[in-house]
Length: 369
Image 1: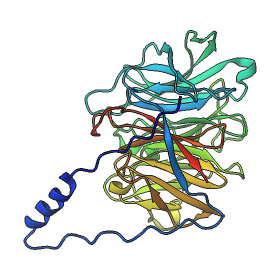
Image 2 (image 1 turned 90 degrees about the vertical axis):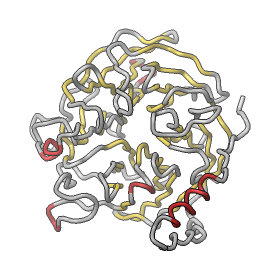
Image 3 (image 1 turned 90 degrees about the horizontal axis):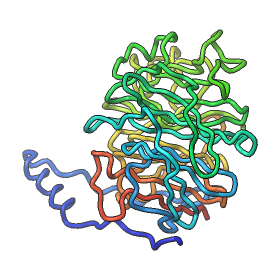
């Protein structure tokens, strides 16, 4: 049953911190409070919190829907896969063998999940996870409420304590796309012979997909730092969100074979050598993870920014971003369109960088009115 919406308490700590910082800055005045948020344009729905779907999860990361409306959800640290009904019933269906929980403060573990577009026939579920010395994509047959043994799809994706990427999604073409990180080796993002710092495109069996830009290669685009958001628009174009370093996080329209600049450039720059981001944010406003696209509007979950960004697509560009739920839910990891037309939004307050409260981590239902 849908539970009432819980609101993150807003105590006096934030105000005290702002005053303390101002007092210790040689008389500098604090930045003025931001003005009111712009209203969404008439053709864009305003998201509204509608209640909790489920709570008490352990760092949920990946989410995709089964035929019929239930979801499968990965837990990063426990390495379990859960089945979650729209009414909030949570049932473990298996644990991924070989998946390793991240080191303290790390970012690896059991990450993205994608249900096969042919699930009614093949019963296959794909996951991206960190093993002992690499990241992998494997698939399982899911029958009678349980996962079968893993079948490797892609192995040898470079891994590290940080920058492991991890998002996987099936495209309208039936191919599987994966976002990877640079595994703390920046130069690998520019090395087309490496799977690090890339967006990969593959057949469901893990082979280079027909039409890939580089012969016999999984690489679809390169020059990425840490891709954690992938989604397709109404024109079947791929969009990606990625973490920057200290200056700019990015939303990109992904073009096959293109170079997105890391580590030579972060955010916009580099002249014509690199594809420029469609939108960029300071990391304290974003640190983006999952994205969803509904009616050609991007919804981007922000971790450090603790908000949901709404970005209308305008041709090859983006309209003015609008932020929602700032500081209400904490860190936001994943957002996915649900079969009923809502969004499911997952928090990540128990990932070692948040401030969890009772009920965390949670799946929250968001209505688009």
